[in-house]
Length: 138
Image (cartoon, rainbow, N blue to C red):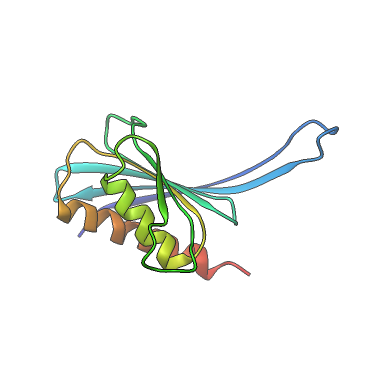
């Protein structure tokens, strides 16, 4: 069984009055352990119209950023690489999440290790994290 720590931060900020722009976001932090040796840190920022997900190991780097947008045609590629390699594991996860939830996702997977089982673990962890977020939406 995987250990999991959850943190919820509410972030609400208002820019100077002349701009009249309010940013509301909910931030969720999770810690999961893969195969009892690899610590993974998840940060999910819910902007309501889009979601940012960062997955990192203890190095806590940002060397991958993929975006996915819902498209009308499911066979079309719905992802774009913003930072890093276009065919990364983050790209696969962004594509799958965008297809499933039909909203834009920005996904950053920054883990030195990579294999198909790890990708599946990260994707299923993202689903576990996102399920209550979408359930609580109005």
